[in-house]
Image 1 (tube, rainbow, N blue to C red):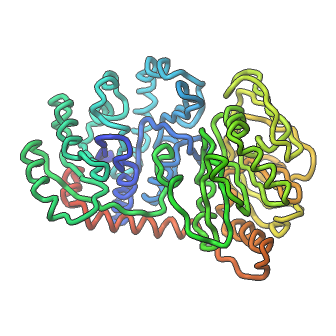
Image 2: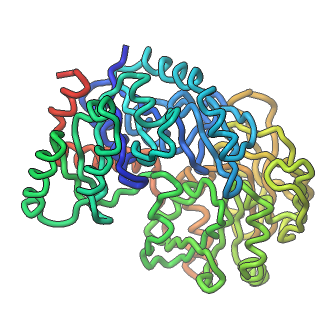
Image 3: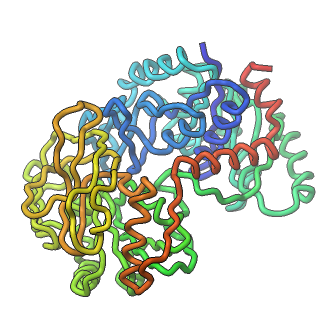
Length: 500
């Protein structure tokens, strides 16, 4: 049976997800079969496994770092917020309904058997399970019936590494305060402390570390510097939205919807040297981009109304009138149509007029489409005509069914059911949309889009270099492992796990 170690944080955004990914990569490099596990995750960035099940993308990143195929058992409960007080609840990859926060809080212990079943599935196949907590273990209002921090650590008998974020200040108070609020049994589970996101000279920090060890009786196992790597993180905590892009020849504006989901769809474009990719949350930030991307959302109607009220709809329509590229994915694709109806309140009851840029009407129903697809671009014309016959692949996660007219963009095979080929997406001469997340992941597709935009600006015939996403990610994970090895006492970590 697998051994385990758990990473808990003194707060949200202490760096748990990235450090779990780093430990998974180190273990993988050292010849161990490691797997990530997070019993309960709240995120709108999700992924579809090869079995057609849904899971959070943070655990996908960690699985990739560990060199294994992502599976829903790594994230048995996924909460996808639909509004400020409610979420769609997904258990072991399948949606079980939408619940208010209070309803889920009352019911969450009912999912303990599902959590343990998923954990034991991984336990049978792995050497080490690297567990990620959520938020802080010292949230005293949430400790009762906890299933994600110390409650889970007790269930699976896992030693704990406590991570504190020094970048935002107060790290010593964070760590000491967390220890003070834990029960004695919980404190005994904490075997080491990691100071994360440090900027400066570690020698200046040393007296504080010695005092911290003396006060808590817990050794400091590492001081990890602040670093930037292009690795998927928790969507609600990402710094990607505020990051200033390089000055590329092509300016792409991604609309930052209030309930934006799967913004990782645009990472391949963001990584290209010719591209400046910006996340735009207001009309004042819109500028004069070469392309507008409408991402997925967990509440299409609410976010479309926000788009209208914010003044961004008018900006997008004016941009389209100028013959410039508009591309929508999933919920963003639905917004490009003529209307959206949700008669049963699957996301938000009601109906709303769309942007009217594609001949399509969408109607929501309780059944959720979850699948992976592979195929190619059909005979499309206009700005992206160069993508004809180029291979495409990705995954679908959506509630709505769209009734379409006009030119279909993709011909796809469902790789989960292996059913008959189907058509997806719509296009005009400069407006394109589809349900496929990850549509830009293939280098040929990303290069085709950016090449078309360069040509529109008068740079026709120039070569476009796209990044092989798989190779790029592998290099990022290796860099992450190097940072962990250089700044964390891995011998101590291995002793905690029980390997050395």
